Amino acid sequence: MVRLKDIAERASVSVMTVSKALRDEPDVSAATKTRLKLLAQQMGYVPDSTAQGLRTRTSKLFGLLLPSMTDPIFARMVLAIEGRAHELGYDIVFMHTLNSTEREEACIRRLLSRRVDGMFLSPVYRIDPESRVYQELQSLHTPTVLLGPAARFCSSFLSVQVEDLLASYAATQHLIGLGHKRIAFLSGPQAAPWSHERFEGYRRALREAGMDVDDRLVFQAGTTVEDGAKTAMQILNESCDATAVQATSDLVAVGCADTLLNQGIRIPEDMSVVGFGNILTSEYFRVPLTTIRQPKFRLGLAAVDAMLHLLRHQPAESKRLPAELIIRASTGPAKTK
Image 1: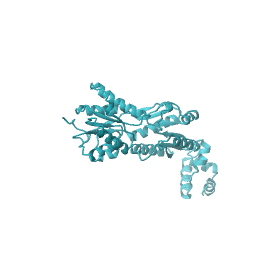
Image 2: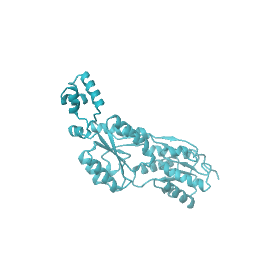
Image 3: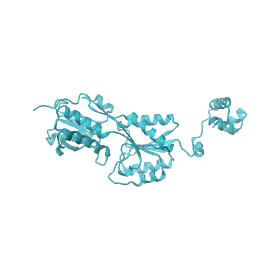
Image 4: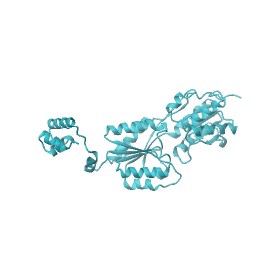
């Protein structure tokens, strides 16, 4: 392994001069810096990031904690975070929580033991108003940015998210504008704030149109394709007379729509379907899905921007980015009886 001492001996300068040149210190001439950097490259010198971290008291690492990368909603967000972090000289330590509070706590502690400079977390939502590990994060003043809305147990941290309520409101308005009066709503996990906001957008649009929420049209549907498929059968078996379905995620919408089609229900002639997220599958589904486009890449960039403010001890605020209704073939006029 090539050391600074080896470069210094080859260049006939001091080790301190080599160190300063490679760190772009101002008291070394530009010509000397260029010569020593070129020589270091030719000799195959690789800086010791651990040693640099000891000197600067930074690790140049960010922790990134997500439920699972199999959820396509995170793909472009991660791409943005990793790309921007790379530009800034940071590496990412990536971990999965698998939506387990126990695993989340273990992952956070591992990241703390790695002395990460900051964390990007998609929280595992729970009903409990407090969380010991999040309290520790706060007491340690570890820069932390939430990828999604804050709940009571993590309300002290900055977050980046979409305007869930307004986006869901727009989706329901779209269906109402097509003449739908019996709109089934497939909600997400009860503990997730985004699920509540999307339901509130649905409820508000109905209320403004002079309609009340019919409890027979509200289904707890979860987050997966399988959850959507099960809920579709529940809708059919309970004969709730829905003419449209609004889901809180594209995965649930795809599972629901696929089952409806397999049961001989035409989309959108018999039933309109709306998702949320605009994952790639929604555009290329059997019937291209009307959905809400989340600015996933911009959310990732906003998260890194918030992190930089925290690292620099600058004022920073949580951000909500607008989402956009994308109308495709899965929605159409309500079927007349």
